[in-house]
Length: 413
Image 1 (cartoon, rainbow, N blue to C red):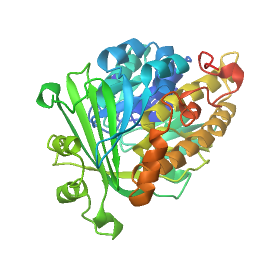
Image 2 (image 1 turned 45 degrees about the vertical axis):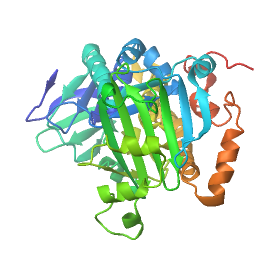
Image 3 (image 1 turned 180 degrees about the vertical axis):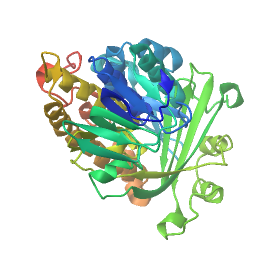
């Protein structure tokens, strides 16, 4: 059901504010526990903007448990390798063989268009019975007796729990923290075009390729079963560093990548130049719950893009909270206070590590001078089957007590 009501709406178990990937993941996961769930979306219709995203095994394991992995794979791409190259000379630095990684982690690595993942989740929510409401911008949440009310201009939505999934610039996070988004001074340009437009000796239709360079990086990978090609160029803006308001402009893009290798230079022509995305995150916080208001997804822990975990962390949030709801249900009654406390205790620590590690990886990617040479030597000496730096992320992390751990085969010894 999709609609809008001009007056007070019927009480449900959970109201979710925001209908992006995080909000729909949470809605689906909680609806599968038996909860009555309503999603309030500000826009005129449910949809998603952007281009490609990457879903690592810690995300696809959960999508499989929700019965969605086959559809995700059918609409995406299973790459052979994650490849890292030097952006200045194009030389190979290191790679991750994803067939081997799938054996280790029990689930595949998928490349997917953001709108396709959103559409898959939206269809699953409709099929599961989630109440989907548009034209509803939630401006406040008011605590009540064993519940809360989401307030918007035209309606009031009562629930046992209200979950803020309103993204990086979350309004509702302001009720729990006075912090603001942190600018990295980096900006991203994206572009997705038909594969036949970019075919050539430097284009891989089967790999995710990352070029890392001083103050910049460039990403290329296929989408939609290889029919589309996605590229992302990210660079540090000199204007942003000195505080100029008009930063990240196309002239800065050209300057930043002027000394890059030819595969990167050729790829730049396929980027959209009429829009760009400034890169922000937020410092980790552990105050995700206030009474019966809770944060999830980018409202709780927006990371920079270097680990490709933004969407996956939101999916994990949903899975973890749903498991704690099941664990704290007795006689058909949910102890929401206990479930929320357990959720934030587990997730805030892990996602805090994701945020800080993403920042560290960004610094590593963008080194220059002797530090760049030292980094390249280190990466070239890495064994392709060394999972030291990703086991904590893709593998059986300490997300839950052992009796609640997600389905995961034992890692090879």
